[in-house]
Amino acid sequence: MTSVFQQALGAGFDRLHPNMQRRFGVDGERDQGCVGTGTMDRVWRGRAFTAPFLHVGTLRHILFPETGADVPFTIENYAYQDSFRRPTLTFVRTFQVRPHRRRRFDATMVYDPDRQVLVDYLGTTQHLAVDLDVSADGRGGLRIRSGAQLFRGGVGCPALIRGDAEVHEIWDAWAQCFRIRVTVTNRRFGPLFGYHGSFTAQYVPAGAPVPAAVRPLRETV
Image (tube, rainbow, N blue to C red; front, top):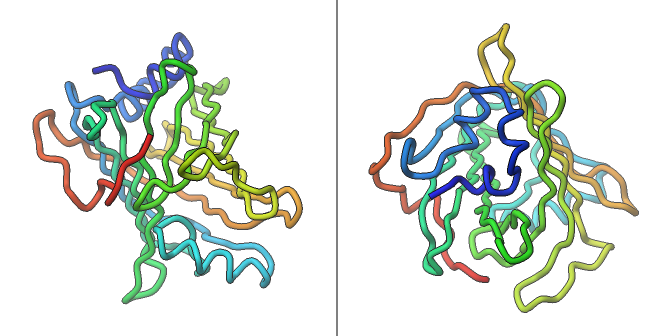
């Protein structure tokens, strides 16, 4: 298999830093997975009225209302073929927001060759599909911006509840770590949620089992 990010970026994949190429090149052949551990310097949310919306997100492992500084963080990326035989990459982010409370932000990414777009299926049941625009920046980093968003069945996500995400990840050669910044905004209500921090990564060898806990409970097309 070719990694879903390599398919989406095409020639742009070669403009990524070599460490970014390995991390986003996980395809099940060289590496089965990439597990990053680190700390988010800050996890934040928007104004108070956004809290109920974020609470709803916890039911499907998408968004959450807790905030904090120096939040322990894990990201699990595993490559596998889903039940529709599509090359898939997990994005399971876990935040230790309190000593006895963890929150997860789950997604699985699939490349759609017909539309030539990377699709991000959010949550434990893939109930929301988001088209992603991916590009390499001028420093070997990766930018991801969300586009069209559809609920299962092809119903468009209303603008009132839509969250538009932007992700920027780079390799910090001086600190020898990955740095990430994520911002989710709503066109009407402004900033909803975000986090930024750093992590290091270890790679899972090809052929290793993909943990059931990182796979969605239900898959969709």
